[in-house]
Length: 298
View 1 (cartoon, rainbow, N blue to C red):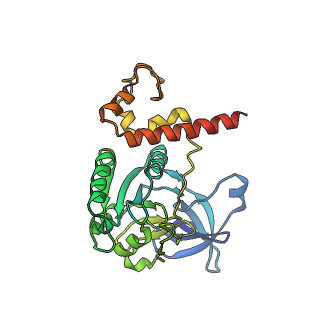
View 2: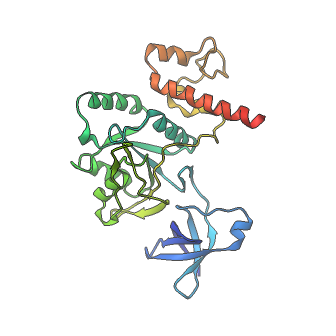
View 3: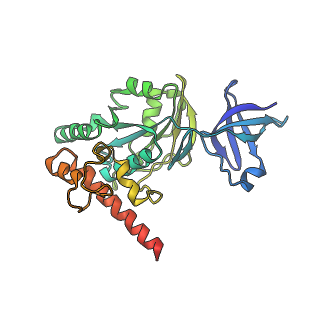
């Protein structure tokens, strides 16, 4: 008889499947036909499996996915919780914006968590308020500290009864936050490298963790560089909500908001209604994508 479960991780060539009813975890083999058909089973996939009579199982079928995040590659995610910091380490805004573009492409909700706020003072707090103003208009933002406990109850509610992926550069405190809201997870926490002000990787593979209070989270490897090569240059402007809001206002329908006459977006940037930092990062990403496009045509 087939049972249903969710893939929470992998062990060698075996998938770790948590049964949706019993909550027990079982190691399952993958049918050879999945490889032949080009089907890659992902963390987060809901599957049907049969028991093999020896304590293990065999995945028989992968149910349709409602979503898929390309990097980190997770299936059936309800939301992305993106953790960033303004100190130890100071995460570049281009990293934050690249990740938001990828989340927009995947059509997922995102919560931006500004962590380690206990380390901030003076101008750093002013910068935080400025960033909350920039991003808070289109995304939910949250301040947290695993040290003082600020924002942890709210973060718990964010995760409750949902399948989430938690992402961010190494050292921003993802594991510390998860341990703080669910101590039973007992995740390994790394120390910040004083030399590079960047965290050492403590999580090496994607895995799905179940919260005691309900819901799952994918704790994934930290990242420093994000691959946006799958995005078409013409598509990029659609992935910035600041631009989408004024769609059709430019003089030309195919305006890329670079140097075209009558560009309404550039006018808004000059007037301060569209954040210059976001626009500058859009231009950086556009040049990167156009460069990749030209390279592929050679």
